[in-house]
Image (cartoon, rainbow, N blue to C red; front, side):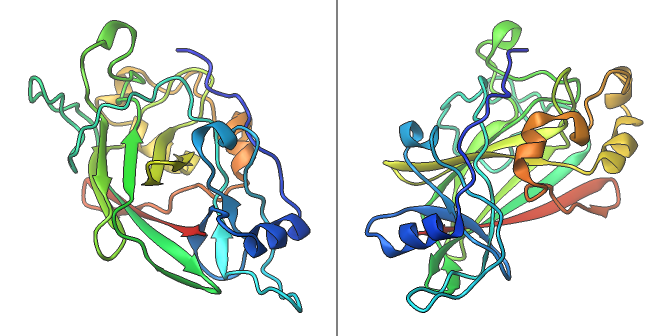
Length: 256
């Protein structure tokens, strides 16, 4: 696999965040939850030089920061392909209908717009998801060129929701277990990052077929993944189990 660990962005100070919020046309991304700052959602080109930083929510005489948690932008990596696959269930290769095996994961995004100190549902934003299969293989690269399993996008509905049916991702050397995502609220702006999983949960999942074919010898845990370290722990999914399936919801909002 190619290297996808290039760092992007830098930490913003509270003063810089306040300046961005006070400016016109600033686009910021954050997850809706109590008590934190927001992170920039620039165009793809500008994204290489801006990112969000963790900080506690605070008040200023001139500006009150929105009550939303930071979600840091992370590298896109070499595996994004703009397939324009509008579908909720991304498990199959659309050309053959063959479903990639693995533990089912219902992944839900709730995208919001931040206005003042409130987060309100944002409809019409395109959310792309892509990740490797149970054995650490991506579609439409190298030996899988032309296949499109585990890729797709959804447009957020009136409640800001974009829902995907996929599988728990496997692992490959040098990276912790992760899912890539990209949010495009407009054609000119986008936010790209990655979602992570608790190591203990991954160990449980990987003890089952088909993951067990590969085992876990040589796996990179979160603590050894430089990209995970850049996330500050704010991109780790809270996964709930429902029988043999897993489910997770990720909240993220747009300011500007």
